[in-house]
Image (cartoon, rainbow, N blue to C red; front, side):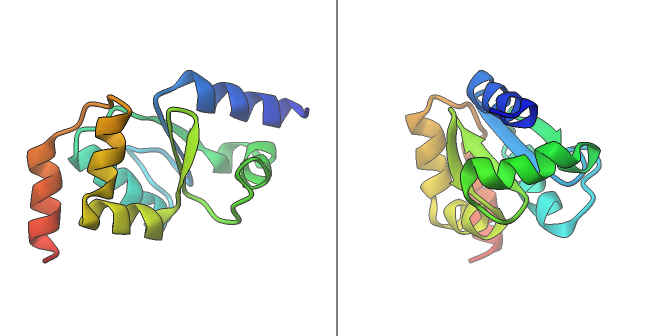
Length: 120
């Protein structure tokens, strides 16, 4: 296992919610990362962010770890959930709420409902 792979595994398993993204949750550096971080921030989800631009090994390693070619990537309780399109769809359908509920992750249900109302 490479150092990057070990670091990724430790991050994914050591945090309830992790977003591998370009930039940080406070300063995203791509539109897709900004969208997912924005959803999580708006819903009040506590999450760790990993800036893949800061480490090329992590940037490539996360794609191999998940067998998913794009960034951002969201993990909940050690499990890969998806990228921007999947997280957006899950938010609008209510599936993200269910996933968070099932994994005892705290979030603002009212904010999640507001996202759906605004996109109805």
